[in-house]
Length: 195
Figure 1 (cartoon, rainbow, N blue to C red):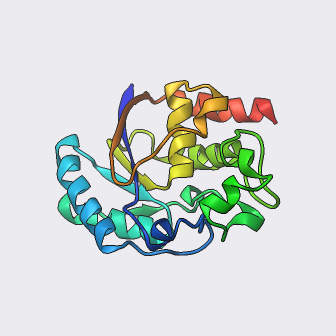
Figure 2: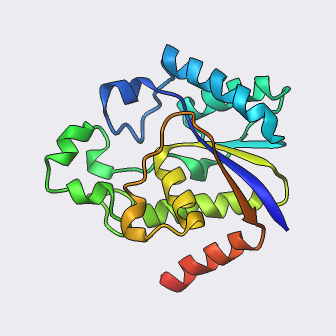
């Protein structure tokens, strides 16, 4: 059986405007981010979404709540494992500062992490472990962040792991994927084999 999954990065946040990584910090939506969420909701109405899951971070929750109102009053289910990727000691750095540092390659590497941070592989593993609980409940809308979305959708699409970290994830642009229900357990098994 195949289910529809829709992945949506939250709307623009205050942290996005300041160009900070801000992974561990709650950064609310800007006015533009609220407008982006409302616009995405219009497009999502036609997809028949029956369940909404989201990261617990305020920018994702605010986006999910705005979308849920437009979808007829659904309530988002918060999944802690959908939080943004942490960059450890670099979390409060600007993107430009990271690009100019010796840690620049860790921004996009699959199996490399900055000091105290996560790899994209670890982000994919935790996100997929959360999403597998929602198999069969779809169509499912997943409201999260660039890190988890690029990691999960990259694997679903078969993107080379060396390139997944370079996939651009715009704010509030739905990514629709039809996924075989059996695909999720196979992805989880892949992580246990690579450990």
